[in-house]
Image (cartoon, rainbow, N blue to C red; front, side, top):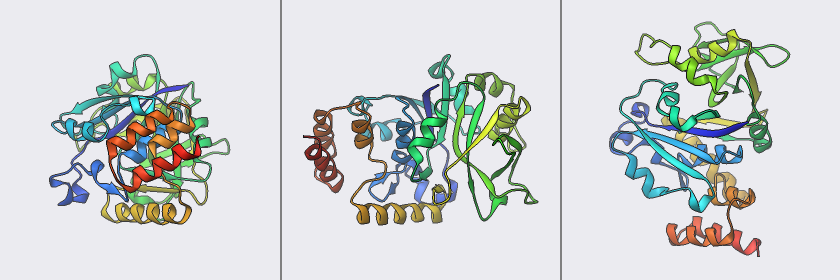
Length: 292
C-alpha cells in the first residue's frame, strides 16, 4: 500500500524561459490554479495523505504562501529543498527519511492527468505492495519520451529513454509507484553522461527482477507535460473549456478532501477566507451549500 507521495517541483524550467527566470514553473497558472495543484490533486485522489514537495533552494516560501500547510486539506505536507537538479531519482535520496519504511509514489510537478476513470486507476496503483508501477500513455512522437513495450500481462518488456527507432508508442508518464526498495535501488545508480540519475535506469532495476508493471489512462484520457510552452497553454485551454462547460473544477483540492471525508465545511470556509474574493472561492461556496 502506498502511504507516502513526493512531488518533484524543482528544476530550472529552461523550456519555459524567459517565463521561468523569475518564477518557478510550478507556480505558474494553468487556468485558475498553480501548476503544482494538479499533481497534488492526483496524489490526493490516490488516497495519499502524507506528501513531500521538493522545491529549488531559496523558493520554499513561495510555495508556502500558496499552501501554508495541509491542515485545511486533511493531509500532511512537508517541504524539502533541492540544491541542484540531479535527476528524478534524487527525490528518493532527498526524501529518504520522509519515506521511512513505507512505499512511495512520485509525480512530476509539471505533469497534468485527466481521465474518466482516473480515481479508480490511481487507487488500484496505490494498492501496490511489491515492485513498481508506471502509467503509460500513447503519444504521436515517442522519440521525445521514455518509451516502453509490454506483454499480455502488462509487464514491461523493454524501456528506453528517447529511442531513435520506434518500437512502441507508449510513453512513460511522470507518475510512478514504488515499493520501499526504491531507496536501495537509487543508491546503486550511477550518474549518466549528463551527470544525472536517470529514472529509466531505476525502472530497469525493477524490470530485471520482473517487478515492473504498467497501468493506462485509457483512450480519451489526457496526459500533458506542462513543462513545455505548447503543452502548458494546451492544458490551460483544456481546463478552461471543461470547467466552463461542466461547471465542475479539475484539481480542486478542497473538493477532493471533502469527498474523501478528510475535512468538513468549516475547513472550506477557512479556505474561502484564505483565497479571498475570487471565482475559486465562489466554487468552494457552492460545495458548502451542496453539503448542508
